[in-house]
Length: 202
Image (tube, rainbow, N blue to C red; front, side):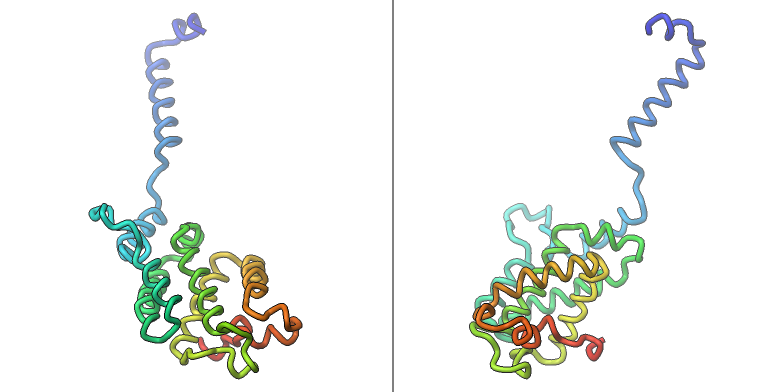
């Protein structure tokens, strides 16, 4: 191998070194893409709701987690206002992201948690501590603005993760609802928020 390198002209040796350096640079530091820039803009816009502020090391919990916990504990319009306002802003920021970057943004753990975590919480709160008495009670205390938000969150989840992932998510959450096991699937499904017809809330 040493003799091979020694036999190379100086220009070829230099070219080989440069090519190796460039290849190493691209492997270890891939070129910055449009979607990388979109992620940076999104992260900045969603700090501190979805992402911790690097300038405030003393803050250990993102705004979404605190707002969701407050909403979960009280299960009321007032207690959930901060979470809903944050989610509304998040979805506005998601809508301006180009389609080709949706996969990259959807892969962020913070985005997946905000989308699916909020959908699960909304479904659980609408169901309540026991099975709704009828299909007419499946939306709980939610008004049309909350149902619009539920449907928008669902639409983003379907776009980012697909129908199969959505079905797996629903099938995982439903059996955990109180008194679900006391009902047949035919009885339970129409009483869940998951059965909401979102065509009327677009």
